[in-house]
Image 1: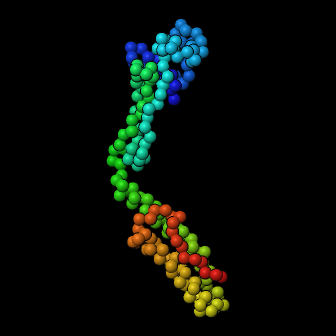
Image 2: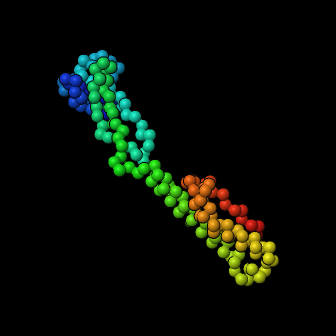
Image 3: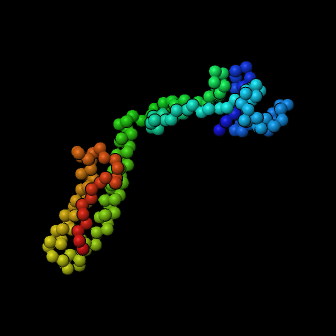
Length: 173
């Protein structure tokens, strides 16, 4: 990142992070940092970054960096323009990518929750419990299995944050 620049005929000729110790026939140029008027006489000016932030990283990027001498303020302006990304996805395409990712995460979590209670469906376990226990676990597993359908339809079809999913409560063992 350039902090100092040399200007000749209103054109930026050199850029430096720090003032050089010696430059052309001038020794200890870097010691003149506290004397801006003398630096200006030698053609050295501070660089100020005027780049604006990107507001939408899906559709914008930075263009090439330019350095322009501004004589009215004795400063070199560094600028990297914000430019549109060619063929950037539309807001609908962006949402679709986010929603597809959400549904994939939802499916993974659903499958894990079903695996975590597969033991309740084993014949020997079923034989040890009453009908209420069996029905409770069966209903829970059915709700978990249907969770992807629930979050693919109104009013949940626009959800993209996996942390906002409301899971059915796990029955007491």
